[in-house]
Length: 148
Image 1 (cartoon, helix red, strand yellow):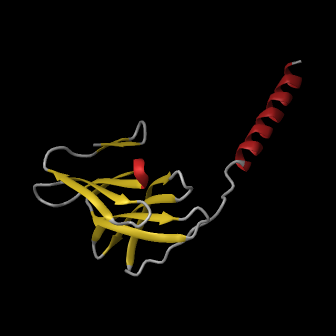
Image 2 (spheres, rainbow, N blue to C red; image 1 turned 60 degrees about the vertical axis):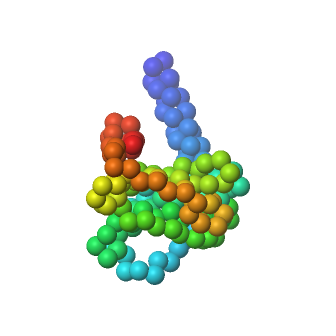
Image 3 (cartoon, helix red, strand yellow; image 1 turned 90 degrees about the vertical axis):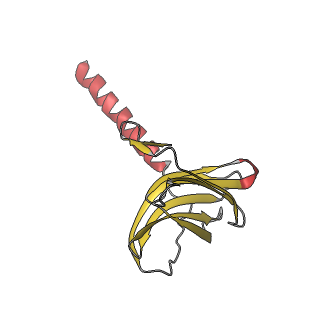
């Protein structure tokens, strides 16, 4: 009896794995061309806006400096734009009300290490920014979370 149950459990697990794998098929693959000589690229975060566009936070290193790069891809995967800000540590992004996107991180600027930059999600225009001397970023490996 236990052998039969084990085979059924193994079959059920296999079916679950196969159906779960099917859910992760990409709807599109987007690419962008970077004009600077890149030394490193690290994906940080991805957010999907209400209109289906996708914002990707990417830590890009060029000219010996890390840059928090915010990239927008349209809902069909076509590349729209990137915006970047020199950083020390990159915390992430979040889609806000009104189609805006927030980029949060820690810069290497003396006296104002923590920053928040808010961009218009459609045009990529910088609409608001703040830097603060107090505070800092922490990374909690237990929850894979960056906190300000």
